[in-house]
Image (cartoon, rainbow, N blue to C red; front, side, top):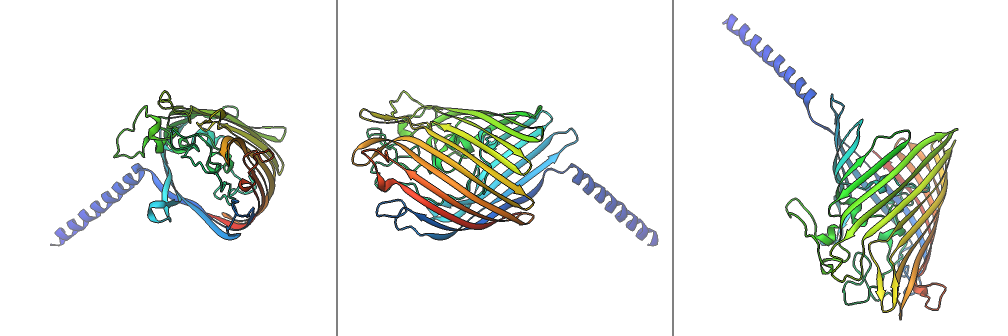
Amino acid sequence: MKKLLLASVATLAIAAFAAGQAQAADAQDSGLKLTVGGYLSVQGAYVSQSDSVGQPGHNLAKTDIFQYGELHFTAEKTFDNGLTVGYEGVLDDGTDSTAGGNVLASFRQDFAYFSGNWGRLEAGQNYSPLYYMSMGAPAVNDEFDSIDPDFSLVSITSANTSLTGGSTGVASSLAASHVGTGNYATVGFTPFYRDGQDALLADKVVYYTPRFNGFQLGADYAPSPNRTGDGTKSALSGMVGDNLPATTGAGVQDERYDIAAGYDGTFSGVGVKASGGYGHSTLEDAATSYLGGKDEQGYIGGAQLSYMNWTLGGGYVWDNNGQKFTSGTLSANGDTKIWNAGLGYAVGPYHAGVTYQQSSTDVLRDISTVVASDDQLKRWVVGGGYKVAPGVDLETTLQFDKYQTANPSGANANPLGNNNATVFTVGSTVNF
């Protein structure tokens, strides 16, 4: 019995040792390790804007509290052969109108990536190189005037525009005149990166070269960038329609590609960053007499100079938005032009700055008669912040916005569509 007991104990010990070795081997050969991060921004705001009857700010509250947050899921591992394999998903706040306007979370970005000394390859739903490689003014506050601001607090929708449009800002019926709605928060006025619209987050393949002497190239290809026009894609829906007529959706675009180049270097203590890029997608079935669309294309360009604690920069975006407007003998090309410039200062936990941005979109507008209109938005942002602790920022901004529509100085002026606004914000962003 004693020998049997000792043999049993020895067997258990060997089994335990073998199991430990197996677990160590499994740990060594295991897959990607998942980490979770993100941020939450809470901002208190006072907004004073044009509020006469019929104007954008009429009967709108002046004070409120806003919040926006994201969860970032990242899994990555570098193998012995030098190949790094990873996954990234970004879960953000969103509003689902089918759920009564309740705020729901949805994946905005969802892609895999592979990288090595040969560069980086991405596949899935992510922004294009025009987004990641674009340059502009140094942001005063990431929540309000960065490349991807979380908050837009000023209304720029004209209250007396009678012809409303679809997602591209044209009349939904082909038989009707193609007249702009005037609400361009989604095509240039709010973010500075606007190019590609739906293509920004379409399923795509992206490649970035390694950086050589400060230079880098990025390029992507999206087979079907317009999700809403081609029908919502999912793993169960199969292939989307091809060469769709305009009646399927206004401005259906296909075969999107982008290319961008950037530089990052230092000369005599002065940091230099610069970039430029181009994007193009093709209007499907243009021969079907679709009067409100064209191939979408856009350009970006910008630069920043930094010395000691100062950064000076600016940028430019042009995008034709894949649309055009016609009504009788009048026409408008639908182009959006944006430029900005700014100066930032940072020392220790403190930062401050000022930026100016000007945007314009060429449309036709229906007031009492259809008129050509170069809708414009001019915006100043002054602000600063203090880093209370790692990952915890206190921030404040003072913003001045001036929106004008329908030939504001001409005979067909539309004062009810104009908006002069002053915005003051105080808030905090917590990163984790």
